[in-house]
Length: 447
Image: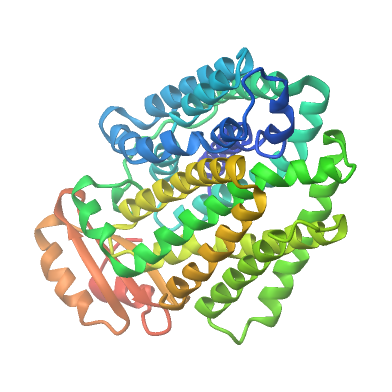
């Protein structure tokens, strides 16, 4: 990667991390810290934890489309201002209802699509996957950093401290957008980065993508559901909120080792089989938690198993969406996927808090175990996609159809789409059979 691509990758990754920290730091502390509000209820706690997911789910695709009309940076700045405003509303809220309002407003800053599109605009075709990978890794780490930082900040400065910090970080991100993130001089083909409204209806009905969309909905529903209850379990077993970061550190380190074990021992198994095993692992965790006599050691073990399975699924689902989506439709497929993901977080908060308020946490965990069993049936129908790759080829629009016919005759080409307005051909190929360099040379295509 050249210096501009490195600057774009790391500055955009930093913006993404700071924003996601603001959304996630609340998760491990809200169930305990919310007791100070006069209108405290378990239901409102669930809304405060997962409420951001509803506005994220509703605005994820529209904000991405808007960035194609008015520009990437203006949409990112608007989103960060909304996020900062929501943080301030929550910080100075004198009731839990207003915290929920702030969380909904935070979620309205749905800038993921615009960030990814800007990353695409600032990178060359052959370097774009590296830029996206850097941002993807940063997103993953942001959640784990939030689990460790949330209890520490809440202990010293309360919920107000967390919300003020996240609001200030969002304003810092605006400065990064204005003065550090490079300006885009070219617009990358948008089929692999941005949603296209006309694609949505077809992709929503795609059987394999539907399984993945429902899978990520269940996954994020379950992790939100878990955090409505786990902090309270820790406190009831004698661990004050200030020390929860130590427990989460143990859990995260254990889950990393568990993930390495899965990847090492599962090399001879297909991707779909390993996913099926992880979903059954989640079902086991929730079935065990439904027994209300869990000891501290058992809860730590179960939460570690949960995160091991969560890590594997969270890392592999986006790759499968990217691979399964028709050529030139990845941006739309990922937009739908992200909407399901955030809506799952919202559902987890609402269902968990509503059920536990009237029937107790054991009913919540029992329902979660049942959902996992239904989910395991969906996972069994997923097709393995490890060997599929995607390429975007720049062509002259006048000769695009002829080149597409020639490309279709190459071994390993699974799917292709010609977009005349973008002067590109999107192809999806079996990497065992297709040689991109040979194809470029044979058809006299530029790198």
